[in-house]
Length: 301
Image 1 (spheres, helix red, strand yellow):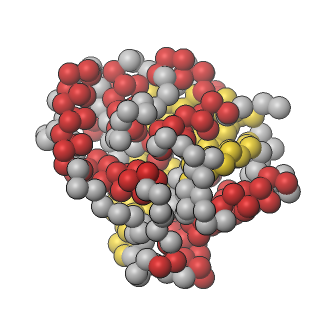
Image 2 (spheres, one colour):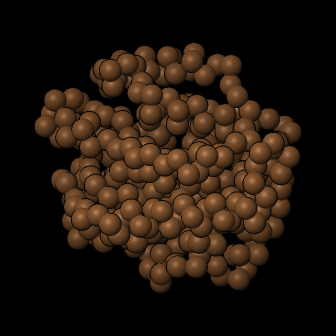
Image 3 (tube, helix red, strand yellow):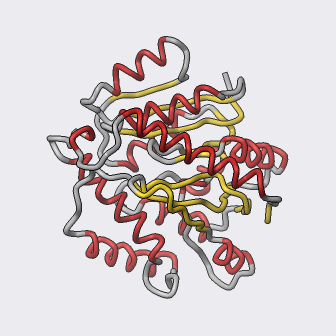
């Protein structure tokens, strides 16, 4: 069976967040949509949870086994996707599915478009009343006017046509900053990118991951590679502050995945319990939905 959109989710030992995200997605899933979950060999009950969902036909595909890193996991999901459009779903972020479907329909009606990106909201789990707005419209317009050869954007709000992978390729498993490099590559190669000035997502910074002593070294090394490979001058500095924050979180997750012993999220100091977590996320979903209802948004291409 083919689908118009595949929601691809990669996770590892994040069951409290995974349950909230999947229950929200499953509850409103449409007939032309599929859910694919790639589990990186979790030991917190994730595999059993996914098997139960699959057996009850709540999700369409899942894989549970070790990954080399996050890029490897996401590549698995992209290759399994049967949808014309692929949407990444992070297990601890918040998504506006009505906006995502608006973007999906627009892409289906504009088959020349390879990628659609949008603005986003941002917050921290332990300070979720403070919500900020972020976007890459300025950098997108500079790229569109050929003032720059490439620009960066986050995959948290990206939709990509599966057929476009033959141009863009998959994630580079050698990069820690995998979506950062992927965005540079897609724009450098001239992929047809559209910008929706609404909000597909609300990115949530969550606790419970170990820090990396090599963060700055990795940032500098991969930034230098991007300069050479794509001629990327950077956003005022080698990598924007917005990117550094996101990359730092991703680096911490990468290191966690590589460890033989994993942090139990229940033992993380300050992490809300299951009921509190649901309340926080319900409020964040409402905030994101309201933000999209209050605006008159358009597509730029």
